[in-house]
Image 1 (cartoon, rainbow, N blue to C red):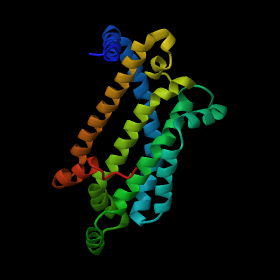
Image 2: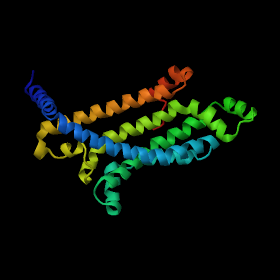
Image 3: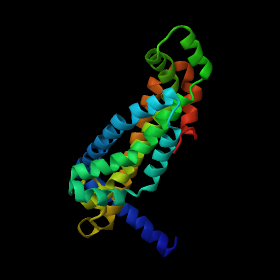
Image 4: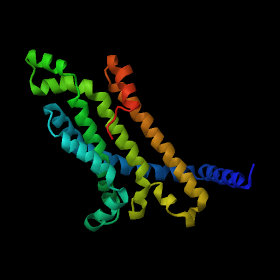
Length: 235
């Protein structure tokens, strides 16, 4: 084992010790991060999900959906936080809005595409049975769209949770308070908190995947859910 390998191993051992020595503190910071991320995702869902579903149902606005995805991916979160500082100041609200903008792209794009791509024959058959637009959307399109629609929510949620530590520079709290403060928590604290962010993001991914499987109609679970986890999402 080289000297560099020994140093790297020692660093991760120290990080593990930091986690073991401060479980309550890290749990509190993780809950702060989840609270901020949950609020941001909630705002993005309220804005982007109904819009994407409506546009997909009427097969209009593909340019808007694709543009939202491009803008959401292209705007650095740090720039968004800095831009909102002049309007909203330092703190929870500023960071929540910035992260909500980040989450809007995947949710809008996937909700549009999931409904827009529903089998046209199934929709026409429902229309031939005399169903209204609302009935077609509720009984046909949304059940078939769930896997891909939920993929957008899952991608947005994991992205926001993994990005939220940046919010610490503007008073957002969470695990980022440790990551950006090496002077107080040393390198072991920075790496330990970073590992916690990774675990938190993975936990959110698994939890939302379980919800997605639960709400997906049973006949579609094997094909659609598998597709959505192996490249079916539009990012």
